[in-house]
Image (cartoon, rainbow, N blue to C red; front, top):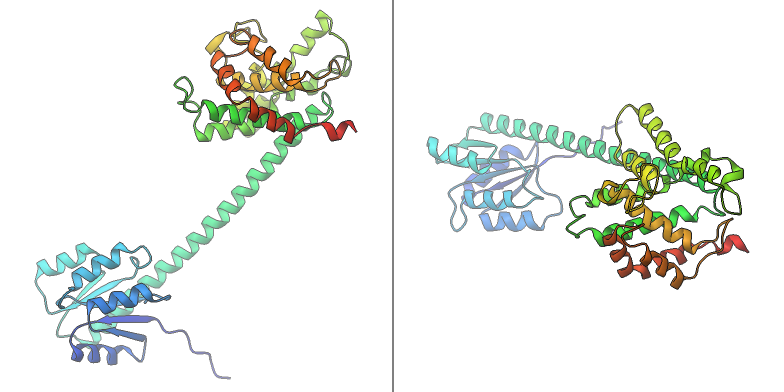
Length: 370
């Protein structure tokens, strides 16, 4: 059975002297696929138009109009061609000439008159080097794609797990899991609105806004630890019951800390989730819980969550209350400026309240009430 011939590597020979083109082509044609160009302009036209670049370029230096140096510069400026090894074939044999060619990016420098064994050996070496470099590049590209794929899978699993955990807490307190969908989107649009605010721009980077979006669903994770007779009570809580309810912030913080300890290293979204879970019930005037933090003592992440969480609580039906209409909700939010909420955040919220309303409509609970 006849063996299939291997694909020949392609070499472009560029020289304005016909005898040189003929000589070099004859030396190479049995081993390689040879293309020729008798000027720098024709060489560049071929290189810029071909879909399959050559594996190696043998390039004369002393040519009219465009010298070999000029051609080399234009090739190196093109990202699609810059990795092709270029070997100068030239009668210019001074050290300065060779130094200039190598500094411009040539891979090798062969002086004329050409020695066939030297030419063939140098060409072979350059093509072997290129093949090895191409293999490594392809391998690295493959590995990079695999890493990206695995990273995307891990992030997707992580996001689903977070959402499942948050939904578990919500099913004990709310008719649907849409509360966490709404609040994470409220937090995101509010953070984007405040991103260029002098008070917040250093904190609210694109990465941090993504972290906030990912962390927000865990704000009420601690409610899993609150007894049903308190969590689901339709009426007002007694002072003793309210003290127990307040512990959901600490329970949430401790649950996330436990996850961090199991990992053994710090994860940005868990750090932010811990801030939110622990401090989203703090109030700007210091009357909140669990620590009674005041003003900027409250983490920015928690202040954002407070606006999102209270807005959603007001517009939503709960076991202990009916939903408020939008006008009443906005009025209550305004009244909380500087007491319950960071004034700058409420000002931003009022400017984008239509976006909050759109989010609420997109993730409404009506289908669960039918």
